[in-house]
Length: 311
Image 1 (cartoon, rainbow, N blue to C red):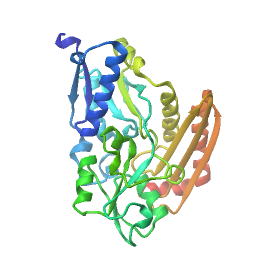
Image 2 (image 1 turned 120 degrees about the vertical axis):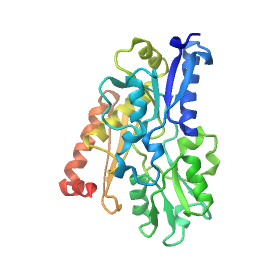
Image 3 (image 1 turned 90 degrees about the horizontal axis):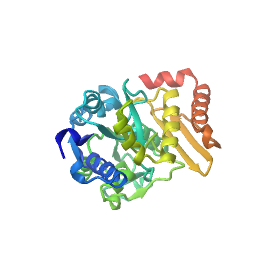
Image 4 (image 1 turned 30 degrees about the vertical axis):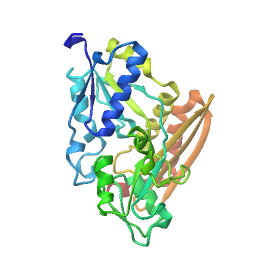
């Protein structure tokens, strides 16, 4: 095995990001009949990991978790990049493409309580930590009395802050806890109808250079068709809404045979205004159905609703 023949997989350095990169490597090994020695996992530091004291919306949004990795992909330092799909901005840099999605994990969010097991059991005015505007808005919709705090950091950092008593509870994605082998820390799994996920939540995506036949073939070997088609639709919904870290947006698509079902929601940051839609149709129409759903929500909500997001 020569240095030039190694498949270099770029990732962030958190325990969860490494677990996702290792899952991609394992699937590539199985699909292509290669040994572990054929791959190198390259850890890259991103601004999103380094800046922990401010909300993402204040310092640049979702791209903070991907920019350095995408730059390494563009200049050839890595061959493939592994990301959490929900962290991906709607616009992919020129020369790159999202070429594969692994089969989606559980999309639900969970509550992790320090002294109570469920959100409903939190005392009046309890402090809850979350870095997600979507989760904050959904929480405010359920419990407007809660004191919500910006809660940045990887899974272990957030659990440590919870243990120290900085907050009485926090929210995380069940998929991440499962990939880390610690789903038991969840004290309440939230109802997906009342607490829908972020677009792309639960799915690992692989990014590569456009037109690179070698990596295109690798990505194709591990791509999960249903997840890919659903994620394209969810990202199209997000793109119509110009989704960013300033926009509380939820989206969840599913495929059952040839039927695509979709639930989309937009909220004001305080959770008081909610607009949602549910649509269903053929698999072949998944993307236009999601785009039409977003267009209807834009029309229903009105321009004033969206201007409030920028404040």
